[in-house]
Length: 94
Image 1: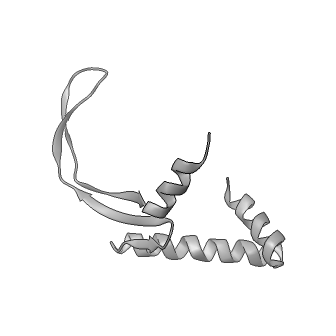
Image 2: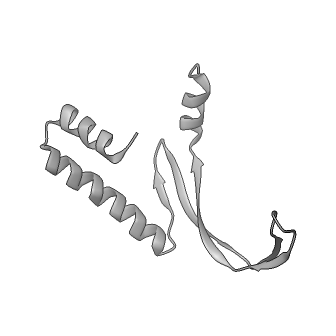
């Protein structure tokens, strides 16, 4: 699913124009991104939680050459699905 698909769903179900639907989707994603950049978590009830975690510097190894290297500290985004969402996925036949 893409952002364009989300816009089409809002357009079809809510009745807003495609431009208004696209603006809403963009505002939601921009708000989520800005909140995560500030280091705060984003919890969407019934869906899950996005968190920003700090990873410390560590030693690593280049898998191709075997050379050791230093991996720099960084921040990464993690997602933890809600129990309700996990249950929905588990009950769905593939």
